[in-house]
Image 1 (cartoon, rainbow, N blue to C red):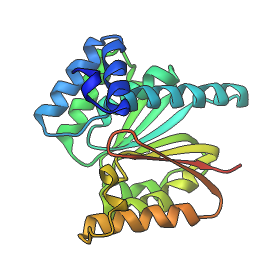
Image 2 (cartoon, rainbow, N blue to C red; image 1 turned 45 degrees about the vertical axis):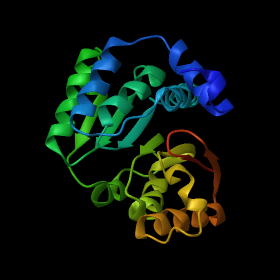
Image 3 (tube, helix red, strand yellow; image 1 turned 30 degrees about the vertical axis):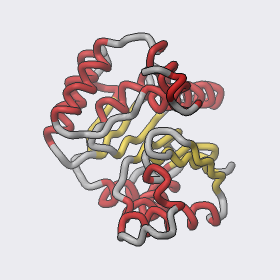
Image 4 (cartoon, rainbow, N blue to C red; image 1 turned 180 degrees about the horizontal axis):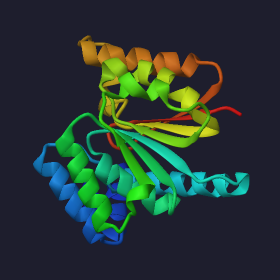
Length: 222
């Protein structure tokens, strides 16, 4: 890619991708996910996930507990690798109903040398189980949800997060389509309404970033 022919954002994205250290395990996990048609984080989003996981691990160390996270995404293997790169010996709960997606994640974790006792799979639809997780027991959650489920997923997940915990909604802004008032399809309307509701919700702090198709970061206020 010739950066001169692209926007500054494209140039930055290209630079990050070119300067990210290659990781054979992550590359293999991305390729396997691609074969199943799963969407995975780009290099910039992956770096952010690792960074945020490392911050969560640091906070949990100060508080004297093991860092813990939740992943709700078909690409839980790839996302999990980014998270494990930041939380080290923490523990992840992957909520994913599809057996094949679980198998991809297990293979990725095993290839990365992640011990079996550092993760678990809950083979259910996220909204069927996330609300039953122990309250105030998790440091971060990463969500890749259908637009119609965004707001309900946030509401169901927040109780599980510790005060100061972080919830990351991947691709929640639909490449900016939420800002196009002419788009009146069901998915765009749902994403737009979720974004509006989150900005008005009490007890959280929201940041929206131009990563992937648009990420929403939510901190549960202490």
